[in-house]
Length: 297
Image 1: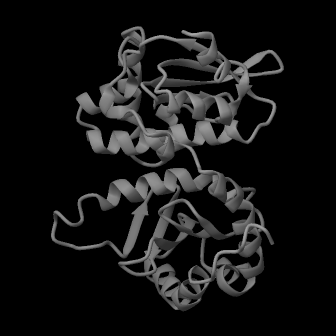
Image 2 (image 1 turned 90 degrees about the horizontal axis):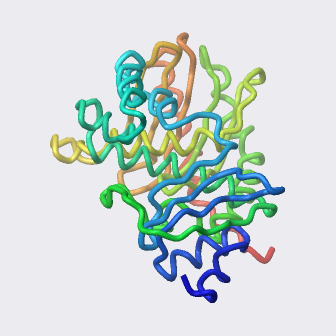
Image 3 (image 1 turned 135 degrees about the vertical axis):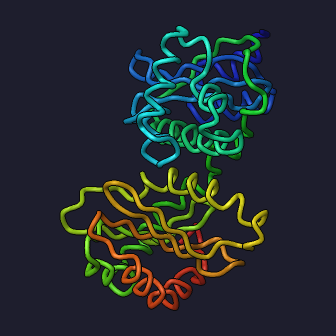
C-alpha cells in the first residue's frame, strides 16, 4: 500500500478513515483503537462494509437474531453448537440460511441492522481512531453493504438529538396516554429511514428507545417483504406475540414512511391496543408533518 493511501486511513479519526477507505475502494481490516486498546473492527471489501463489531454492543449476532424473533432459541442453539464444532470456519449467518431457518433476504436485513448498530456506537466516540491492515478479504459479496446503508450521513448524525427534543415536547399530548394500556412498556414514533420523532416509556422501564429502533426496523423490513407477493398491498398494521410480550405497529398510511410502535408485556390485549393506536393516528400524522428544524437554529 502506498504511503499516501496509508496516511488518509491509518491513524485517522473513525469517520474520516472509514469514509476515505470507501472512496478509494480499499480492502482490509480497520481496527478501532481507543486509549491503546482495540474496541472494535470494521472489515471492508472494495470499499463495501462486510462486517463490523464493537465492544459496546451488548449482544452478539446470534443473540440479536433471537431477541428480534427471527430464530427460535432451541433451533438457534443447535446452529450455534454446529458453528462452534466447525471451529467457526463457517459464518453463523450462512449456517442459519443453510438450515432453512431464515432466507437470504432476511439474513441480509438483519446483518445490516447489526452492522449499523456497531458502526453507530463507534462513530460517536471522538477518542477512537482506525488502524488499517490492507488485504483482500474472503467474504460473501452478496452480504456486503454500501457505507450509506450502515453509516448515517452528517445530517442524520445531528438529527437524533433534535428529534428527541421534539419527542419530549410532544409526549404529553401524543404518547403519554398510551401508558394507560394494560401491560404498557414503551412506544415510539419513527420512520422506516430511522428518524425518531418521539419516544415514551412507562415510569419503571429503564430504556433508551433509540436502542430498539434498529432491530425494530429490521423486523419491519423482513415482515413486509412478502406482502405484495401475497396480493395484500402495503401493510398498514402489524402484530407479533412473544412469550414475554407483544409488539404492535401502525403505519400512518400506505404512502408514508412513518409509523407508531407500541410494546407491551403479556398483559396486552390486541383489540384494546389497536383501538387506542387508531385514536392517536390524527395526532401522529400531525407530528410527522411538522417541518424539519433548520440546522443553523
